Image (cartoon, rainbow, N blue to C red; front, side):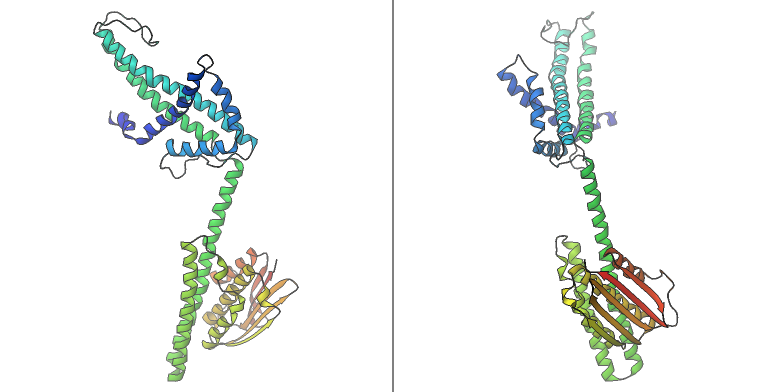
Amino acid sequence: MGRLLRPLLRGTTYTRWLHLWVPVFLVSVWLFIDMSRPWVPALLVIPVAMIPAVRMGEGVQAQLLLTPGEPDSGISTAPSSTWRDRWRTALWLEIRLALGAAASFATIWLPLTSVDLVTTALGHPQHDDNPLLWTVEPPWVYWLLAPLPLIALYVTVLGLGHVVTAAARRLLGPSAAERLATLEERTEQLLERTRIARELHDSIGHALTVAVVQAGAARAAGDPAFTARALGAIEETGRAALEDLERVLGVLREAERPVSSRPTLVDAERLLESARASGAKVDAEVTGPVDAVPGPVSREGYRILQESLTNVLRHAGAVPVLVRIEVADGTLTLDVRNPLPGATPGPGQGSGLRGIRERAALLGGRARTGPAEGDWRVRAELPLR
């Protein structure tokens, strides 16, 4: 019994009932003007539905009253963009008028019928204007029939509420173009999360690698001057990592924040000095207008260079490193070479190497990592367009 009466305690039941009554108020205005032609409102809603903003208004109203509090109601709030959307809106308005008429009839006449049955059972004459009353014998049967209209009203309100909600999801639901746009938006969000994961891996991983290498070298050296330089390099690298972390967290906190604040290849000298401070002998050569490289390409190039130097320090240690950055013929070329470490990662192993190849692929370029001519080599070619 409690489950049957539970819908009476839900606010959705009453908001849906209110939604069914809204068109009745509008139709009643017309009936005051001309009661002889009650079908005119059903004709007028067709040209009204051709207005694109009507679909948006109906969608907002349906979300608020039919599916309050539901994060994914399945009802669109976008204006009509195609004729299909307009005709679906017109059909929705016709169905809403019909369901509203049924709801208003049930809401008015079913309680009155229950009252009339009780008064008839008490011996008062029946009202001839009630279309739902009928004569039965013996009179005490009216006592048994009196609750039935209220039960019918309960079932009608719940049933019509479910029907109008299903019709709204069907006729006001997102079109194919809107579903595609939503899918693209979710894809962009997933790509953004992947990019943020790469940013954290590259910047924080590089800083931790430099700090570990510097600390180990300082402990082994036993030279106060070298230890002081190592601590200074650790401090500088840590500050740079904190700045990168703030940028990444800023993206998480503020989706609209521009990405132009992230480091680019113009800041590559900071990476090279950090590697040199860790003991690596870095020989760098920059050719071409690096400062003219487009922002997205320059930022990804910076991260590829950062990950390459991180891998050198992590797997090979303080070894000579040859870095070549070239901008020519519409392509940015990054070439990082170092002597092979004792154990080299196999093809496709290591999230850093995968990240380098993924970054290059996202820009329409390519990256090769692996042994070459006795060295470990990372070569990335990124198109400038």
